[in-house]
Amino acid sequence: MSLSPACARGFFVLSMADSMQVSAPVGERRAVAWFRFANLVCSCLCLALVAAWSNEAGAGGSKVDAQADSPADRLYLRACGHAARGHLELAYELLAESFGHGLTHPMQVAVDTSLAPLLADSIWRPQVRDLIHRHAWDEEAVMAPRSLPGRRVVIVVRLLDDHDAPVSRAVVDLRQSDAAHPCTPDSGWNPRLFASLRAGDSGRVAVETILPDTSGNGNGCPLARHLHLTAERQGFAALRGVILLGEDSTAAAFARESTTWGATWTARSVPDTSGARDYQADIRMRRLP
Image (cartoon, rainbow, N blue to C red; front, side):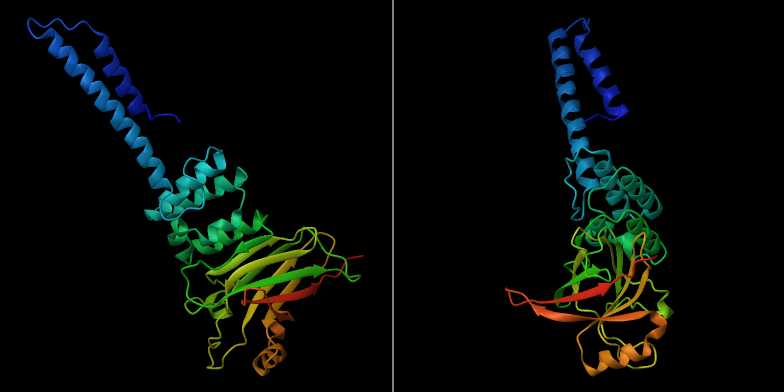
């Protein structure tokens, strides 16, 4: 770990003073002892300042270890620190640099409490979302922060071609509404909950989130629980549409009225061994000639 120039100069000056022959008429030994004591105090203060910088950069529940040594993680820690202090433009620039250096799990940004001020801002959120999309790498991710109220669910999407073979390496974007941030045309399609994932060899992606909100679409009518999906893969036709969670009458009505939002797919409910409820949707991608 390198020290700041100010700390380095402090070490140099006091070390020189410690090695000098203090030529006071009286109390020479006392003067040397005081210089040595000051040197020790300065050393402790500099180390404390370095430790405080590391802790401040990682404040707020950052997913990256404060002692991480990779350039991407160091930039990420600095982005967290500036976001927590409200320096959103600088936080975004550092975050983009960390992605450029190969940040391992891009979707950690969506749930890192240190970056909450950046994602809460309706202007910066789309830019962060686009950044994660361009560097999508995670096959599985947590989409909704743990602090967000709501029933936790896992949604699994499998991408298949016309012959039931998995479509790997497709980039899948998911968006959903919550009580405070709807995902509708009126909101500019700018929800707080989103994910960008890359399908693995099995064509599978999965997110842990909360059950989507059913708030009205502006005319007082409730919406079926759904997520918006887009999927892109070279050599295949791009997909755009909504995944409906369940097969009730509200979902059926939504499917009939949502043609402007693209295709509709239904995710079937699959209870897991812990008693929680998961959903799974198999979606086909058409191979281009």
